[in-house]
Image 1 (cartoon, rainbow, N blue to C red):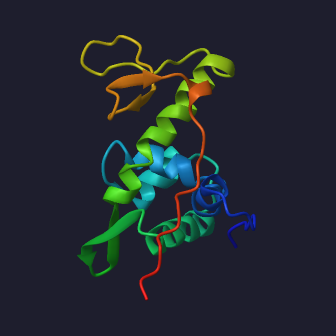
Image 2 (image 1 turned 180 degrees about the vertical axis):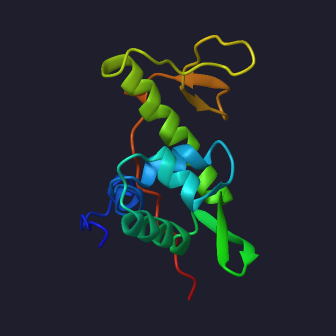
Length: 148
């Protein structure tokens, strides 16, 4: 059962969907490309098969992944990230960057082509400029006026 925070906040609402244990690790693995159940179970050492099935079911319900059958008898599926699920790549990348800086120094986030370290940054396309983290905040959208 997904955790409910009961807060009108996009961070809390997002965590209600992706904050359960294993969910972002499934996203991490599917960012590499489609995977079968057995592939995910192997890469996610320690996850019970019933828990993996439950996470995949919930992720599919929320439109984060798509399940495609590659065999009908017996039924076998391959899992793909949807466009919505692929957008979580920046979240996984942010966690990876933070984790390599503060917890797990043996890895680093690099450009696959050149091998150099990369940074995730805030960028304002209107101003065509990077924005420091202290210069970013959540702001409620203004309610639209109702037409009579």
